[in-house]
Length: 507
Image 1 (cartoon, rainbow, N blue to C red):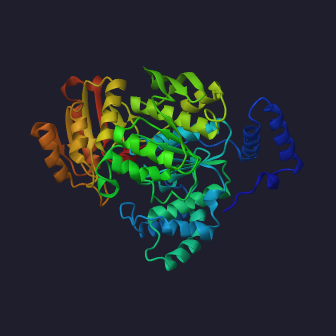
Image 2: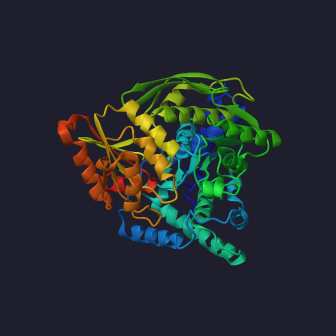
Image 3: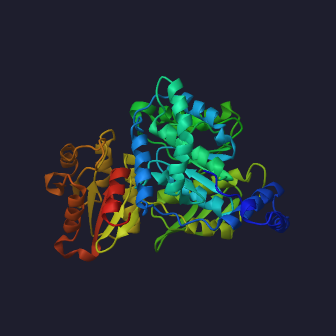
């Protein structure tokens, strides 16, 4: 699983010379940070520039594709992500036999209801801009399972994913034999991510929880920075029926002495988070108080921001993502990276503005108000709960001038479907209800029954097959000679969006 280290590729004197040269250039900066960055830049010099962050297609090599499918099949034979036995006992046992790989690097841990993946991608881009090697672990994936584990801003190569699974598999089987329940799909993937990050090696891991926080499999790390994106009602059967109850579960990622970056929250959720921070002597930075969005204006291809961070103001930041929610995610990401570097609490300084601008300008977030086709414009958004739907509806209304917008909606059966549909009702001229290919998908006819109550019978069309739904929506959008202002929004589930992305040729 290990790649050759720089000393394996070059004369032994070269890395040392480069390291000392870079440290010498950084004498005006924080000395500890200068040493970290210098070591990382030395590694990156020999490892090559990071790849573009894209959603990977299936491996081109038939043997690699066959091997990856075999791994996917083995993982699929375990408990899925919706079947849980809430504890970290099994993942802790796996970490123990693997030699505690999650302690080989510092980390930034992210919880919340909406915005976690986009925020993680922004944090990763910022850290990369400061020459730190990153590992990012997010879920679920849009198209390929390898998206979940990224190194230096790019999804892990299929070959390395397969190799990592092969390396951890004996230890997984060892833990399986000792526990009442086998490790789940998500627990095995978490173990793989932590092992891959240690082996890379990375300078910092950016880790998104799967669900909740306290008993989430990712919560075997002791992160110095805990990020909480906006909390709303989702997974209420497992996390609680109110924002406060959900916040109680999610506050479990806040560790002793950490810094908590708290996005705007419902009052009761914020109170729970602040109480937990006091209990563990954590420092809290709140959006709207210690940091936030100072100004925002729509720009071609995204938006132009001024952000107030923990260390000062950052102006003229172009973010190539749509929606006010993404601006707030950017403020949270910036504060998290500042906190990681000790800015605000330990140091009174700002990060380099050119690096910040470059990082944010490079951010992509597949399936989040992502334009995948023109004539008519087709937009994908993975909103799957009412809060996410409201953010998507606001974002698409602000950034696009559609005279006629048709929705293609396929949801999971365990979501607040009515709330999601009600959020989209004001912006959809019509809706085509469908279903994705998973067992969790809500039957198209059941979804249609709810949609008729929200939209009325004349605005709802049922197409159980997603390809038929896309074709129908495009036809509806182009009706009444409104071709130039036609649009289609595909939404309701990450899985629906991922399958649409493949059908539209983006995979």
